[in-house]
Image 1 (cartoon, rainbow, N blue to C red):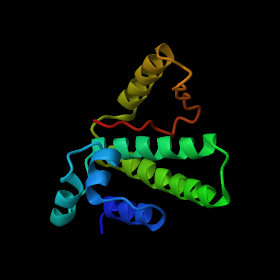
Image 2: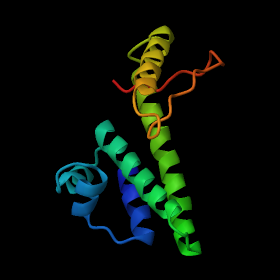
Image 3: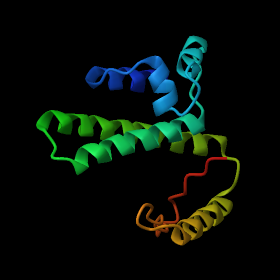
Length: 141
């Protein structure tokens, strides 16, 4: 079972979502995307994972901004776990390909920080620079 199938199943434990809705509203793809990658047993694209991470984060923030009911808080906990899984997968994918060396990765992180610092800081906070030289940035190329 692929990661995206696991996440779809976990989301369906607490909410009812169709495969078409999952493809379009959660993955940001065409309505047959999820069923297509599932039938071919392939992983979702990095773009789809980022879209899913954004959607989960938005849903979690909507719940947290309202007067949270204990049942909804269990959904927030589930969303936190799904975010962690997605972030780990994206990080592992970026490291696995090892397209550039650590110096280049640090340069890219610096550029990302510069871009983020020039954007609206009320919606996006700049990434911290790593003080530990062993920690490398996530680079999706």
